[in-house]
Image (cartoon, rainbow, N blue to C red; front, top):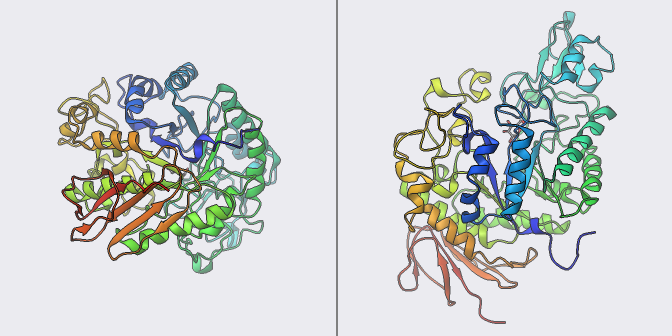
Length: 526
Ligand code: GLC
């Protein structure tokens, strides 16, 4: 059993998301791979993160860039070999970095042997029962069985050659699994054990609020895809069914048998904080991504409510919070914050805010360089959303453009080949890791300093006290050592409260905190 006296590592860890395709390529094919990560581990050590989250590197036809898994216990040749994975894991552990990997339990790839067998089998067969096949409605079953829409646009059902329909809440190449069939849970547990045996430190669970669908597959009201991030979302048979909690209880038992406190982190897109907190009750997942701050406007009441509401509900079940500003599915936060110098300034201020709050922090590759969302030409777009929306939604490629490492023109050391799988902008020469490493005033210099000076012993359960003022987020996080974090979200400078200045997100002269700047202040001794 874990030692109860010190909080487990993941409660206050800084995780770093590696979108494997876009981190570093070692072979020259323009796609990132495991050896590329291995070659750049020192960047992550110098940055000061505690743990990595690797997006899927498993065999896949890449219809959704690896989130369509055809063999969950293998490595796609595009990303390397199992030996490369073992080497990377050992090298990361040698450097004190923990490694978590993605698990994708809601769906398989349509190229997974189970789905190929299901297509070959007849309606009602055990092979079909591992997925969600149904007869259609209307004459000859030509209409889909329900009015459900895919997350990526278009109907959530595709017709198999024999006329039955199968469900896919994402692309047609990602058929949803039937979690009411025991084979599915057994296979997923085998996958957990496989990677734990290799030595991983935990899992990020893709679409963790998915998996089960309501038994009778009810239509959604008015045919709309419910907005799960709304606090008052209508219930739907598509997501968040009560049975999913038993899955995580089973997974938790598997992880609890292992040494080293491996972690389960759920991607749970549910806006109702109390409902989301049910996923991290003491015998379920350890952490859920908290996207509330990511969706907040740069405005004190919205931001403080986002912090308070999530912290309150999570603490009610004994769970730690998480803080996240960017990932591979959303517009980069520098751009969301307005882009340019103003966006960078807010991004620096936001980093100091999340690092001061109790809980775990998730960074996304490239944010430490201040990368912005890239406007890609239509012809370069690769996200399946672009096609499935009939070229109306551009999708997520703009935050997935490969990392610039060195040099003054594309591919900026990302690949020994000539070009990267998504084109990099021509003006990134000053944003490479090499260029920013030479300049202590760069975003990278700031991230390194902020991570090094984060109050590491911050108590994950430290009380938050708000010192309410117009246009200012001013929160005291008590505990050892504790910190007072003041963010000026207004247009005018504001006077700083008493206390030694520990770190500021931009230079401060005197005791006036400029607009869009955060300060960490020491607490007076108790
Ligand atoms: C998650 C992933 C996203 C993927 C989807 C389907 O939301 O983060 O990238 O497309 O699941 O697997």
